Length: 449
Figure 1 (cartoon, one colour):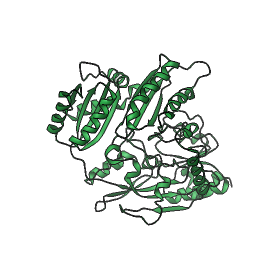
Figure 2 (cartoon, rainbow, N blue to C red):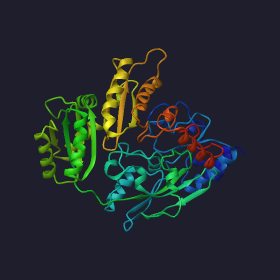
Figure 3 (cartoon, rainbow, N blue to C red):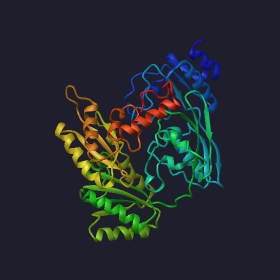
Figure 4 (tube, helix red, strand yellow):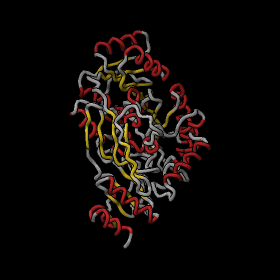
C-alpha cells in the first residue's frame, strides 16, 4: 500500500486530501511566496492522529510541513511540492479553563480569538494579542513565539505558556501539560518547541497562563518631533503613569500614508512621530500626565480616545491595512536595542532610497519591546528582486547589533540571513538539536536552518 493509502487507513479517508482535493490555501502563508501545492494534506483530529501520521512519514522518510492559520510572513508554512502538509485546522478546541490555577488547556489549532473570548467569559484575560487574532492559531503562535501589542507588559508568547504537548518526528508524544508557575524539575522541555517553527516537533496542546482582566483601558494618541522624544515618553510613562499595556510608535511616512488612505485626521499639523499609549490608569490621570508632557515640550499634541469607536480609529492607522496594497510590498520585522532604533531607521531608509529613490519606506512598531517593522515598496529593475531589498535591510542591521526577526520567525525567507544575528557556535548548536530530535530531517525541512 502507498504511504497515502497507509495514512488514510490509519486516520480515515476524509483526513487525507490528495490531488484535485487540495485547495489553493495550502500553497502559501501571507507572504504569498509559496508557489507549489503539497503532495498531500493531513488533517488530524487528535494528538494520536498526529502521532500516527508522523510515525508513518518517519518510517517512509517523507518530509512534512506543519500549517496553522497561515498568517505568517516568513514562508514557514510553504511546501515545495514534494512534502506532505499536516494542517491543524481540525485539531481545535478548548479542553479546560481552570480558574483556580488561572490556566487554559487548548488544542493547537484553536484560533487565538476563540481563546481570548473563552478566557473573558471565565472572568480572566489571555494576554497574547495579534492583529491576525481571528485566523492565527495557538500552535502557530507558540511555534513562532509570537509577540504582539501586549509584550511590553506581559511578555512574548513563551511567557504565556506553562505546559505543552508535542509530537516528535518519529511519532513519540511528549506530554508535559504543567499548570504550575514554579516547576524546576529538570530541563524546561517546552522551550525547545516554542519558537522552533515546527522543526523540532509539532505542538498539539498547550496550557496557557491567564491573568486578571486589566480593566478599562485608556487609549491616547501623541504627536512628537523626534525619536529620542518617543523613548523619553515611554520611560516617563512607565515611571510616572504606570499601568502601560501598549506603546506603539509610527514614523511620519507610515502614519501619514495610512491616515490619508483611511480619511482620518487627528491633529492640524504634521509631526515626525506618533505614538499610541494605552494605560489601565484612570482617564484623569492619563490626561494630567499628557498635559504635563505638552507643557514641558516633550509632546507636541495629544488626544485621549473618548469612545471605543475612536480608539478603534486610532488603532486602524497602526494596523495599516491600506499600506498592504502597495506594489511589491515587503514587510520586515527586526529588533534592536531601543536607543539604536531611530538611527537604524534613518540609515536603512537612506540606503534603500539611494538604490530606489521613489521607494516607499516606512517604519512602525512596538518600540517598548525593541521591535520595529519596516514596509518597503519599490519597482525592481533588471536583475533585482526581493533579496535585493533584504540585502540592504539586513546588511544595515548587522552594523547595529540587531535581530533579523523579532516576532515573525525565520521560515525560508530569512534563513539566508540568520548568520547576521547568530554566531557560528549558536548555529552549530541549533543543528545539533535538529539532528538529535529529527535525525531524518523530515520536520519542516529547509526552514530556519
